[in-house]
Image (tube, rainbow, N blue to C red; front, side):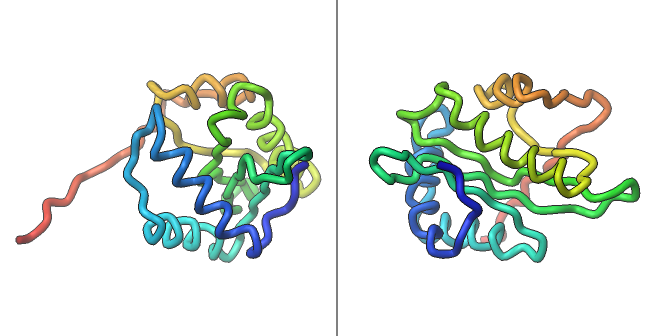
Length: 150
């Protein structure tokens, strides 16, 4: 069952986020505090849009998508900040169901596009291609690491 995100789901969203992204293939090192700060920033966005996905049998949180609306000169777009599915539920259509809910919202609200960033070498890249996203060769994700002052 997919539900519109509610603040009462925040703690469970954080727990699942840590479980998913600290596991393969990401192997991150999220702490509870960092996950709460990060997802709290996303959920606190003035134009936040989020959905949660629940296992109908167990009532357990199995996925979430955190997005925000962005103004573009042609109209609003949805930027997907994070989307994650519990490891045991991946590759079973649940992620696609969450993204279809985002797409439904976009269509109903005259949103012009859904945008996101993902790694080319991650399984999510193929997932988003199956969803219908195109890799735009003319765009580049830019990054500069800042060395800490000791």
